Length: 345
Image (cartoon, rainbow, N blue to C red; front, side, top):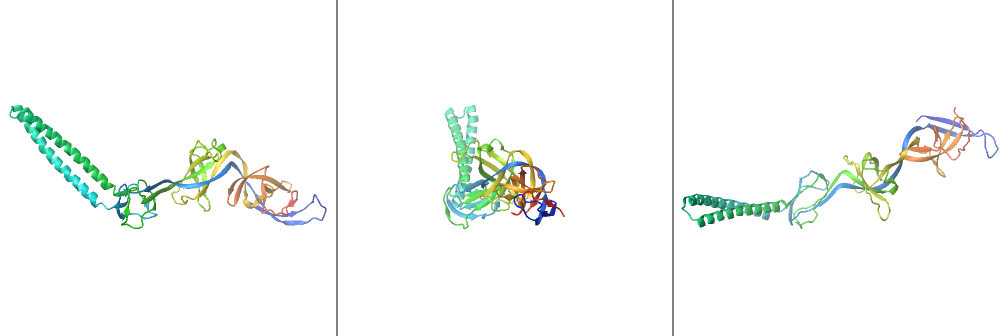
């Protein structure tokens, strides 16, 4: 912004007579015209997009833990394992049972096949043939039963290991191994931290303005993290019965880890139509009986103009003035009087 240092000369005093007095030097800043949209800021909490406490489906002694707190894991990665000595023996027993059943079934089928040929020649009776056929079918059923028992034993063995169901960050993990773990007891906690989900509530009047897919700005409360790429995920079509506010969820990208889960964040939501505004230094704003700025008209006279703050951008403000403004006084003081004539040296 181009600026000028002005020397202010009081040419007339409306409410008292006296000699012309030189006022302090002023810094005049040209403003930048922009089109702005009304905005409303609401605060909420940042939650992980996925959170899952994970435990073993069976009880046992924890013999290994392959991840630590803070580790990033992939889908299907092994997190830890229980002592599987008994489960391994059960699998071996089931495998042996299946092998025996398959051998018996092979023999029974062979006998049934030979009896079928002998029956055709009249060498065996119909009763003998039927008995051999039944034994062959029973042997086949024993094979199916043995396969089911083996599948059950292998499933029990797999339950002695725990794997990540989705890619994420390990938030909690056991520090030591060797202890007993009960079935269903949470041992690991996995969070998916990219993206995060900001959950907040908005006034009911904004429900018609906000739509899923709308990009919004999210800033961390108490930290410097911010993004303009957050997207409205869902606007729940039901207000909270206590506050009469509508819940909203916003997806916040967090690939670089700039945001921290389970902290507060502020979202700036666009509302209303675009309107003519100006960008001024934050130090040019006066907040006495309302937000105002000092402008200088074409005749070089100081004028107080009311403004509405639309957006705060750190050292700059976007404001909507009550009348056209091309330049404002930076760092105005209480000594400035509206109507004062200023000249540039």
